[in-house]
Image (cartoon, rainbow, N blue to C red; front, side, top):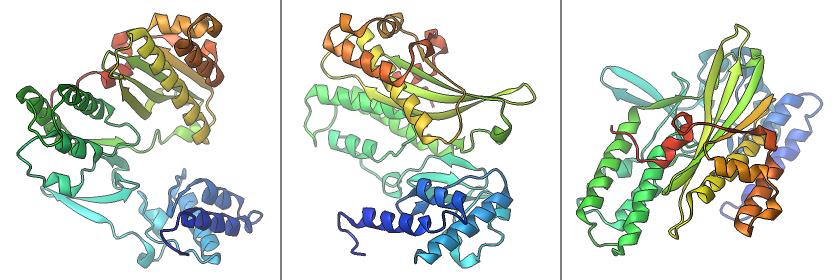
Length: 353
């Protein structure tokens, strides 16, 4: 393989999958996992029990080895799953010390994973943690904001407020390396302090340990907008055999409002479209059968638009209604009060830390 060539990733993936297909009859589940659970040279999977995880590790390793791919760096939240794995191909876990406690930390596609807790955490690059820049400029704000990696939207309410701040900085017309006005500097300092405090937060990786025994699995997606931003948040709601319920955050997403003024109802429609796309993504990317999908909005205007004939409206509204109708069913849409809409938090300033 020629590393660095444009075709290299596609070629490597093709060879890996071609090799795996040879074992389709002897280990079909492992082959499917190789096809669906790989991202470049990283493999991520989850099994109900440690025994099944150990078997999956064995099968995937043997199949990949047959094609010349040596899988290394195995790590799991269950020591039993790794009992039969040679130590030399297990991950050299990073250990962080906080007080009298030691925590094992793994990096997974830019996220911080704590195998002992089986939870995701927030990771700030060491270079930014040690940044001692005293003068706050637009360049410095953008550099630090773009370094915050949060692909699943765990901390959307923080990243959105920083984007809103950057937009306000842009409106002032200040240069890239000119000092920011005092009020903007204070807002930035408060935000940066809050981001450092996120290091103590963690989010469970597993939706629910009893998910295999669930009676029903519902997907609920909420959309909301303000004059500054619009956002959506997706949750799973599980009904368990003991008649209890569990709610798990799936992922969130947000966008700042355009610099050109746009009405709140249109922004609410944008949030509804974002929620529709998120629901479609969750449905396609999960192998869990979803029994019910419900989408929520606190805008009666947006809901009336969705339930009306798109041909009655101008292009901006009509095009978005058509896409929402393609991705969802009108009967799936419901109204929720603003104070009960979790997506509302992502369109406002973050809480005090």
